[in-house]
Length: 163
Image 1 (cartoon, one colour):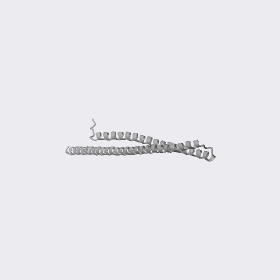
Image 2 (tube, one colour; image 1 turned 60 degrees about the vertical axis):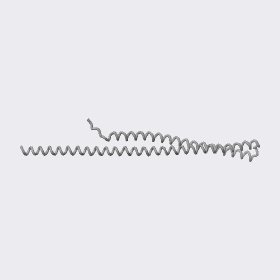
Image 3 (spheres, one colour; image 1 turned 180 degrees about the vertical axis):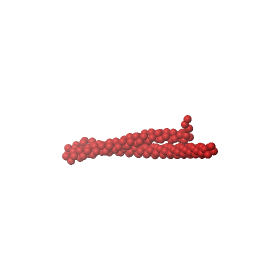
C-alpha cells in the first residue's frame, strides 16, 4: 500500500486552480479579440461613410461649378451634408464606445493572464516542495538501509570472529 503524501491534496487544489484560471484566461482572451474586432469594424464603418460623404461632396461641387445644379439640388446637398455630419458624429461615438469596451476586455484578459501566471507559479512551488520532500525521504530511506546493511555486515564480522 502506497503511503499518501500530505501535500498531494494541496498539489491537486493548485492544479485545479491552474485549470480554472486557464479556462478563464481563454474565455477572456477570446472576448478581448472579439471586442477588438468590433472596434476595428466600427472604425472601418466610420471611415467608409466619411469617404462616401467626401465623394458626394466632390460630385456636388463639380455639378455646382459646371452650373448644372439647381436650387433644389443645392438644398438637398445641404441637407445631406448636415445629415452626413450627424451620421459621422454618431459613428465616431459608436467607435469610441467599441474602443472603450475593447480596452476594458483587453485589461480583463491581461488580469486573467496574470492570475493564471500566479496560479502556475503557486502550482510549481508546491510541486518543487513536494519533490524536495520526496528526495529527502528517499535519502533518509537510503541512509537507514545503508546503516542497517553496515550493522548487518558488522554483526556478521563479529560472528565470524567469535566462531
